[in-house]
Length: 288
Length: 276
Image (cartoon, rainbow over all chains, first blue to last red; front, top):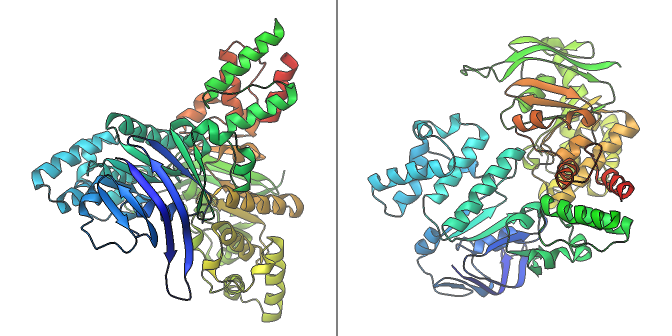
């Protein structure tokens, strides 16, 4: 689903002495089926921005177009249910929102709310539990008897059960151990490709951004600070550092090597394998 | 080396659970060291942390903090004063309405007289670089700043050990650096022992020693140089290799003849430069 954000502004507690501008003049086009990484440090406005994408927050000025739905400042009240069904948000620490007696009921809650039949919701629960890599036996357990990592997966399954077209992920791997982190990110990436989703990933990890994202948007002080393809963004190290961020480790290493060797190597992808290849070739050339 | 904490043959069950969360764990913590505890989710590392200052008590075995024992009721206050804990969520441990109230809260619990209290509050906020924020309210602080206040609250009680239970995992990169630098200074300049439970491998790399927890057992302990060479061990404990080691390995597969895996980017750049 194409997402088009125009001159978006958001003010918290508008008209009170506590009024605070959290977003200002954000313009961002996200083409259908794009994987976008949204980066910025705490307070940069990224969480405020994503809460607009399924109508949890309303623009104070400007507009957001999500497929056929337009959300704009001063616009008429509209039924947001169809939008919320299509745009699923996985919040930070989503396991804190589990509440039902059993995993199955918890997963079925969303689909049932949107009018799916009991039987179909059950089938859906059984499908998505497998998608997130958990055994069917988990369905009858209480979500609170599961480990933290399993609870996270159940919460994600609850969002996937809605079969969203847009997936909005707010630091979905925070607090997980390294292998859990990789598993969850791979799961999202696979879904993104298989179901042709439009994905917005909020992350602090430049590594994840470099690995999965087609485009990167950097927020800073409530404004869209940088936007482009990963290689374009990683060329702006100074600007990133000014926003309290940095390039991925592979690029950091390459810059250190270039400085030491006087060479001017660059990367076409930002994986460790790619870096090793390009360093290996450079060493061979020097050796011969 | 002198022990400050000794964990001996500790087994721990949560009530109603059939399998032990910790199985026969023994561990010495040396005075003044930085010890990182790493392991997969559910490996028992946070449970272990809570046993260190008697928030949890072992079903079997003992936990000593210098000459005190956590299982002994009379010792527990002294142990809690000596071993301060910083938890994961900055919002869950801020109890005061301002920075100084928050620090005062802990001191009141220990019955510190007012004059002394004011002195200690001022001293401890200065040590974490938060003196300008004394009267600020929690919502005016960033996550990293809140964690530094939590550390100040511990410092005011003149502790010998600080336990960080994933204390930086909910912070952004700037907050993380802020907190780690504060703690590193306390460790290096004041000799406070640091036990850091973490998923951050780069942080564990700079520790004096690393303990690897796996399925409730201590799978390994040693210097980071040795621990992080053990690829299979780390993998089976749900951990990843640090960046420079992964790159070393990938370079070898590209036919670059490195003599070993390097732990830091600087060492690896130097090693490559010598090969060129």
